[in-house]
Amino acid sequence: MKTSQKIKQNVVNNLAKTTLYENVTELLRMQQIYEAGIKEVRTKLEILDAEFKVKHDHNPIHHIESRLKSPESILKKAISKDIPVTERSLEENIHDIAGIRVICNYVDDVYKVAQLLTNQDDIQLIEMKDYIQNPKESGYMSLHLVLEVPIFLSEGPKPIHVEVQLRTIAMDFWASLEHKLKYKTDNNVSDDVKKELQECAKSIAEIDLKMQNIHNRLNKERV
Ligand code: GTP
Ligand code: MG
Image 1 (cartoon, rainbow, N blue to C red):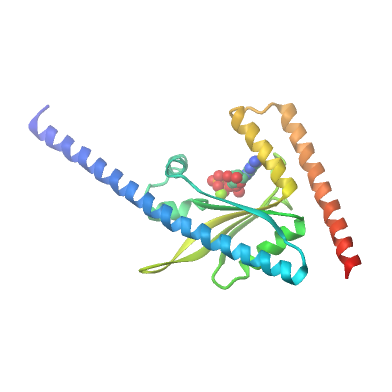
Image 2 (tube, rainbow, N blue to C red):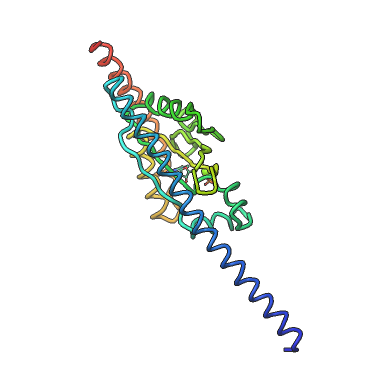
């Protein structure tokens, strides 16, 4: 290799290293910020649930799960979506770095919690997908929200996106099994199983409705 070519190659290699280093540093910083976002929204949900219990003698939330997307998954998604791996681009294009799943007791609870949360002054609703009103072809049902919440850092507030998935216990039961099947069988779920899952999703929607009606009747009788 000629000296000029060697120098050129050296520059390219070092640039790649610098970019990689910057990317890793950015990703680690982002982890801390998004972890704070999860904590903030989780606390808001816990407070709403406790207040609802005092006011209405009923906990709308059964339990809350949360997860931070790993740097590997963030990079994978960035590559598959063909977006640059910079803090700004990742923040703008990947809405589920911070993910919260709220498992509710009844369908009405899902909408009540979503309404109470999005009504808060420091929360902005960026996107809502209602897969309960309009289930996915697979049968998947959930209410998906993308929220913008401020994280209070030393240099001031920083708005970030947090994805919140709300669903009933029954919907969660279905989604967990379907996800496991998809994962285990490498996306090749047979047509028979797909059809059975779609039927299960319909039954679950009916059962959720019946449970909601019984719950409403019991509540009325107690008043
Ligand atoms: P992404 O780029 O993956 O976020 O696509 P999108 O914005 O179209 O997302 P979508 O609204 O489809 O929701 C994505 C998330 O919802 C997934 O990461 C899953 O957690 C969940 N989800 C969506 N569809 C299904 C489904 O058919 N089965 C299961 N089990 N989960 C689903
Ligand atoms: Mg999404």
